[in-house]
Image (cartoon, rainbow, N blue to C red; front, side, top):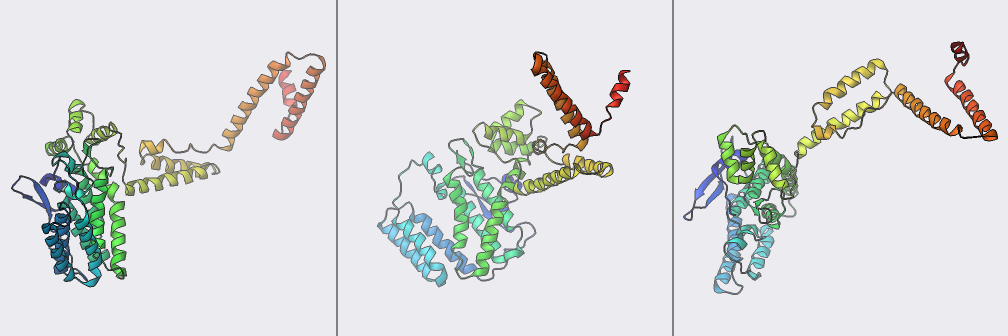
Length: 400
């Protein structure tokens, strides 16, 4: 059930990684400059030394968590963390001290070393995930430091979070947790944001604003990068199919069984079978298509009152827009409003059916009731003649 990111997956996801192989054979990703960059963006207020010290504190926190409180090893680690914290600017200390104290005082939970650790709600116990959290934190921090200058930072963080989800297997489905079902998956993203936020002073309005904008951007991009990944596998690419089989072997088996099935459809089918619905489209694409649908609806309303020439223009524009939206959205469009002539035709047809039904009932009437019904019908005919400006003499002439 344990998975780690490979070089090929890193390249597909657009995440710049180098892979380090440990003595146990596990592979972990590490940050290197993204394509087009020569180095990390310049930091405005935080220095590399401060960042390194903060990272060192987090590493101590991670080592404290599995230790019993009060042991000499735990006490030594706590003192090490405190010495690191005291060297930091005052504004950075409180949040880190809280994290150290919580890790020191928390009682470790005894869990089997194989499956239970993988399924823990603490993402730091999942193989390969702490390194991805560090990578996301670095990218998030770089985006905050650069402010609006690093416009791709939100998407970069979203891609790293997608990589996390691909490497965290939901025990209930046996599939990568693409839809944030597990607490551990959500906690992993939370650690990325929290670690950067606790480095920012509360009175630093510019950096707090940059952080909030970047967090919102990465969240907005979450569905975009997921759908892009779903659509990225090509059946005619041996490399793509190898990658798919590595991550989702069941989806690859479906493709072997059905040569007309797309990889995207196969992945969706595998998740649907486990009761998980993947988004049909990303946030940006959905917003773009919604605007088109709204325009079609606006033109359709205008069509109901347009003259013949304008109606022809509107119908052509509506038809051109309709073919650009997916079938599921096109099927939900309201039909074009009926013209006045179409409404009149419908009303006459409805009135004809009512008259036919009344005629069948009149045949069963006798005496005064039948005379009364005929008088009501004559009154209706006079009203119709007046309303529609009918010349009833034409009926007499045609009978002759």
